[in-house]
Length: 388
Length: 164
Image (cartoon, rainbow over the protein chains, first blue to last red):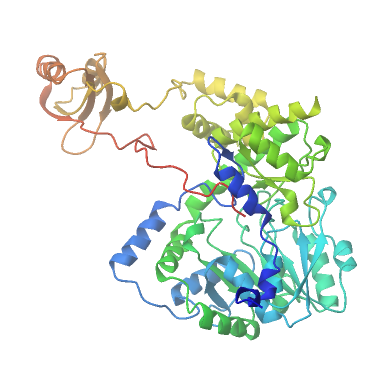
């Protein structure tokens, strides 16, 4: 056995991301309009950037407490109350390096080898690998366009086994834009309680809910004790590059997550934390402006797809449309690749998001109105060539 | 409800005056007829005065000169500042006139193709108007941001082409 053959088989066996290949393709081409980006097109509001610069000038360059700045945790606790979530900022909140770290440490805390993790799919690409790295076994639970990609208790029950331990929820959803109403969540909560499941609720897109207000499963009676709520600054406040997320959970869970966090990360970067504090304290007006703009573009892109003859369910959250391209007779990967090569529009094939994603493409509308209009024209022309 | 709708329409048009009524309607979740009706109404009411474009003239006309002139005047009985403002804004080289609080009364913006042209306007036309008691002329050297638009070319999209 050579030196490198002895590298971790668990890591080697994780399939590389399907997004990667598209990225390489798109990256070599000129004049590409990208609807493939999973982050806001807005730059972080200036008052937030300015606060971070000020913090640097004042010398905030050291470690913070492992859990994060106490003022920031207090601001997060306040903020979560908007969603009827009550967490003690001293005991039940940890500031993480993006929502991503929170997902990782939550899974590592909740899993023992052999446990199964239920992942509604299509979904964000990191839940499966993080589950595997934490010693668990990912089990996809399909969601369907007919249900507007909401998770139903029936489909969930069908995948539950005696090994099932954790359910991951990501609503509003990347890539489908699906949201779960409080009523939808109650039905899921019932199943979770019946089978004594833990829930990791990734609510990073909570603010980007366009009809009514986001509902969190942790606010449903009997769920708080078994739920880790994950969110962060990235999507709502256009702060992806700052890498500031957080997890909120009962102290019994959070203290274990904190152990991993303190030995692997120590603390989230202080300048990011200072920026997050400014965003939570004074950022709601700017945030609302961005949400209103996403909503306008959302209506435009959905109508655009429907006008060109592609079925498109109404995405009620996040910033993705997930049109159905099955009528073209192409697989989502073929569609995306040809669209890129013929029409220079980058989208992400639904198949990379797991079971049920095949036959759909993810189109981010976190880009300017002008770009969306141009992209829609190009996609429309491309679709016409297919139906000839 | 119409007031907030009108505001939203105005913001969209202000951002991009070439946007179609149909697109506006889609973005605001109303029908095209309603959008057109409200826009026509606002045109009639002179809320919408012109469909304009923000242009970085520095890139096309290097000779262009813009002066911002602080004008002190003695207000007149009955008509206050309005009559003097009108005498000033009727000159075609004047692009904007505003009544200000503070150290001076009217802010006048004048555009010309030469420094001397603007200087002549101030000394011959503006200063000689009755009730004008003083002027201070500032020449604009560079525009960084105008009407909410940053004129710098650096603001490219920094994001990766595709990201999860």
